[in-house]
Amino acid sequence: MRQQTEEKNIELKGIFHIEDWQESADSEMSGGAKLTTAKVQQRYEGDIVGTSKTQYRMYYKTDGNAYFNGFEKISGSIRSTTCQLVLKHDGIFENGQAKSQFTIVECTPLYEMIGKTGRFISTQAKQASYCIANNN
Picture 1 (cartoon, one colour):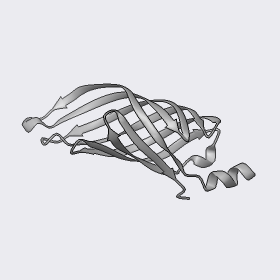
Picture 2: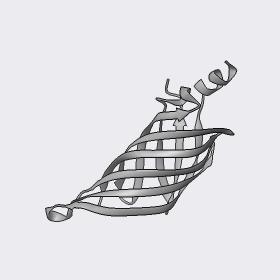
Picture 3: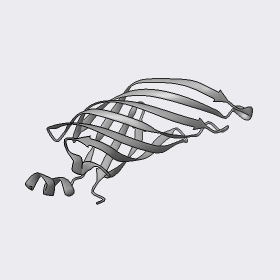
Picture 4: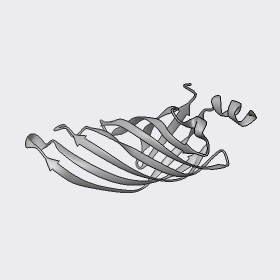
């Protein structure tokens, strides 16, 4: 019971590093807009430690900015508890900075994390800070 109480008041922070980014164009439109798929591998540090694989669907506008969504599977630990998480992303890439709001849709064995939301903001090349805050 004590672990659940601690988890309800959780706030997780840290950074992740993009280890690999493979992107391919799926459809190009007039004026330079396009749809792409990106497969991304990342390494997490901070309250979450581990690695992840993400698949984003992206829509690039003619000005080069983009909207993206996708799912990310993280294998690692949250504060020393081994777990696997799945995040559902909804983000934007604008003026050279990526931002995403996400929801935890799976977290085994820490099921009380499901439904919690967070965000990431890119801070420099191939790195971003993340935060998951208590919202339930």
